[in-house]
Image (tube, rainbow, N blue to C red; front, side, top):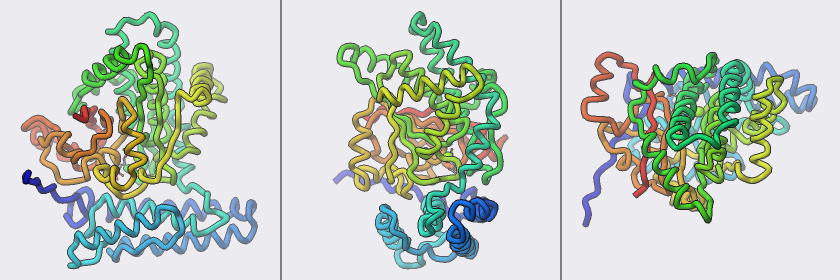
Amino acid sequence: MAAVTALPVSLSGRFKGSFAYFTIKDRLPQILTKVIDTLHRHKNEFFEEHGEKGVEAEKRAISLLSKLRNELQTDKPVTPLEDELPDAALWNQHLDYQRNLSNGSREPSWFQSPWLYVECYMYRRIQAALAQNPPIDNFDVFKEGKVQNFFESQEAVIALCTYFQELLKNIKDLDEKQLQEELFKLLQVSLWGNKCDLSFSAGEGSSQKSSPLLSLENLIPYILVNDMEELWSLLVNAKKRNAEKSNVRVDIILDNAGFELVTDFVLADFLLSSKLADEVHFHGKSIPWYVSDTTKHDFNWTIKQLQSANHMWMSRCGINWEGNLKKGVWVYRDHMFWTLPHDFSSMAEVAPDLYADLQKSSLLLFKGDLNYRKLTGDKKWEYTVPFHQALNKFRPAPLCSLRTLKSDTQVGLKPGQGEQIQASEPEWMTSGKYGVVQFDAAL
Ligand code: F6P
Ligand code: MG
């Protein structure tokens, strides 16, 4: 029988002083307080739209959220979900699984259980508080922040759209080397776009103020794992192989709305315009998630905003992207698996339909920190453990993570690399200053 190597322990609030501990102790309650405050501030709007019923619903939702905050802060056991949403049964099965893991010694609880589990659970309970209270059940408590991030990043969006439209003018004349350079640039723009998330800053503004293209050179040393060459060979070879029958499909598993989403759109457009890909499938979240993650509404809203912008190149981008959706060369999808607490190694079992869909892709681009945590199981890995090993048999297709480090887990580094940065910058794993473009060929 082949030896089974045990997985390292999960990051958790039970490790006092760890990033998980501070997140659960400080950042998550702050996020809940903001959510409650947002509902308060919309009281009049609920009244205007739905009358007394709206205000009653708002009060009930606030009381559920205050209860949730209290459970979290006093490390109460995690309770089963009581709503009727389609994923409730899966969540409750997962609670049983967590109970078995703790060997009955203690009930799963906020500070004792894996961080990934309880953090996801908090967002799912926020959704439950709304979903259980029609007529405000479709209200996205994080929408304002996402919209604000988009508008505060206007200049950067303009700079990027302008650069891209100029590039499109002569994209047909670019040789392979030039195409490769442009791909690398836009991959980096999309990577650093991931600095702009709102759960990290507990909902405080985190927009991109200046042109993202100007700083790329200076940021190269902060890319700890840089597999862009591998991505290039994969795409170029796929293109050559598929020259006749076509259909190179790239999937982008999206992260944040706002500026980051625009960088992902630009990258996706480049892949099509350069003919490195024939189709791009985007995967978003089916419920508001981790403050700034992209829902279908955010996805469509962003394209509409660009389309109707007062700036020629911004609106050209919006028009083209809407066209891509209409032609079916861009596809938006969501799946409840992305907002479950499971890491991706259990996708094949928990969401076989999604796994089978991803298997049809030539390349999966996973954006952001949370996706990285789910790819690698959110565990206390040694820095030098190979990415492939940390993926723990998750290999539907070749994949690449574009992630800025905002949680203390990282694999695939060279011996001594992590320790060396640690010595001078103790916060390197959680500051968002470093990033990875980390590839796995799924062999
Ligand atoms: O720890 C910071 C945090 O809120 C994590 O909980 C999460 O991993 C991350 O930020 C969200 O970042 P991203 O939007 O890049 O997934
Ligand atoms: Mg996010």
